[in-house]
Length: 187
Image (cartoon, rainbow, N blue to C red):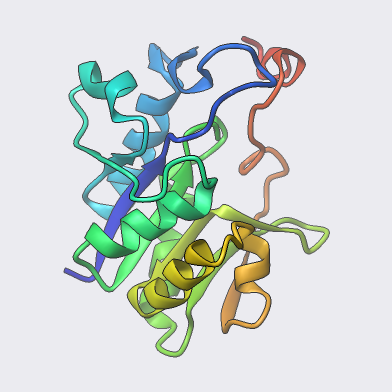
């Protein structure tokens, strides 16, 4: 299989004060919405991390081997268990995600033979590593970073061959951390 889709759910939602993945959105929950967009783009989807909180949703689940180590732990799980050349990864708190954007990002990855990752890049040049496709060859580096206590995804990407995939719409990869940000989405 060339690609598989994953939604990272391991966060604590501490700034919001409740599980943001389970916020009501588009007739379902936010995590179900994001999972649907990822599934449309990649053909498959699994939720990574905090499986006990989401087992009732009926979406395939997988555990992290390094829980509590941030999103890099979820990326490691996707690369380790994904069984594919590319892992399309999205955070569970991205209500602006669209399947068409994710499909274009994934297509860019499938065409990028030498790349380690294809990462959404906002207008100002800021990378959004929780909306990206990661190549399986990156697994050893991710696992080494986790074992050494280096959990920042941005740091891992600094010396890698990455393709910056431009984000046209401003809110497409904006995540939700606070009640104010959630209200800005009309919720």
